[in-house]
Image (cartoon, rainbow over all chains, first blue to last red; front, side, top):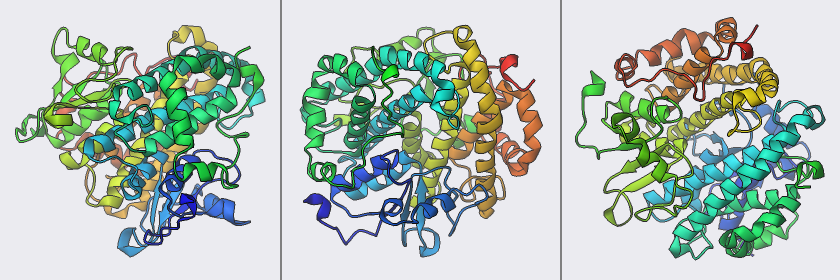
Length: 262
Length: 262
């Protein structure tokens, strides 16, 4: 029920991101949902909400209300917190999460923990980006079909070298954080690093089901404890069962069987 | 002289990064140098200093002194600021910069500015990473020569689409920040976003001299004001004239004439 517990003492946070796909907006959604704090997901909540997103990244914009222009979605709008009491507009997923983290109780209990949480989040997002590049190794604006040959090479290296490197790293982080008992990357409570890594793992299981099935057993804490624990966390469990959670489709995480282990 | 003004009231910051190349460690070095705060650059300062870096990223490490293991260099060690009064160890360039930023006076004057500075830094580092991928589009662990064909395609897209997208964005940020008069991305003083973007531009001028020469004129604030201003900033100017500044060579920024505009 946490996701329905509208915390009205918070400002009316607004997420600006493409509709219908989880994408990079999902990392921000999961933070709100884990904290049980309400937010407006503009492009998913109204027919022409996507216009707010396209306006935001207009190639002519020099910013609005004293805020700089965002390079790309997601962006976060917070009424009353910006220059001269107007809206604050932030962009870049890790920046949005580092801003929200302490306010949502998802950034640990001291400065060191807050920085480690940001560091692990950045590493999980690097893995997210490398996953994207398996189907777009040459040009982000071209079709997968126009870079398929290169994708096959890139995905092979990603599966054979990068996936074990990243998963092995996070397994060691969990092992080293004894207080977390395998459930938390940092300390003994949920952070936005946990929800971020969880979503990337979830995406990898969707995009590379055979590869992940073959490797899961090597990372006992990551898949035996962490993954299931975050999935069942207060707020997250309810969110995943709701219609607000969009399925992976043709965003960062795509299931092209030819790119998976054969 | 700022670079020699050793601020002994600061903890003895230690940068752990590969020797001889600027690389991702350079973004951290530039922050210290701009602030005139001394730091130990272990791998560059002693014969076997590189061992401290390789030990740090040992594939068996679960962390040291209560700190998590770093995924990759750079890392920052701060004696006395970690768990139980031991050393604090941070990794991931944006996390290190967001930690140091307020302490070095390079993170703006309020929360909004601090977040924008982090956001722009992340965007400049995205450009840094995309530059790296022009010579390593398929596999980071393979030689350029083994992915040269794909590099030619990737670099073409990067030069034609990505460079103007990023440069156009930062030109608009400078234009929108009237207080900065073209010299600062955020507010009216130097931040680690400025030094970070400056280093990426510097690397692009090295890696793609013909492409950049042809495009520079389109970005009057970026190359007419910003680039020259940061280069002359207190601390930075002295650093660039010193032996501590390593030339670009075979790191992220490489000059392969065949990847440049023909």
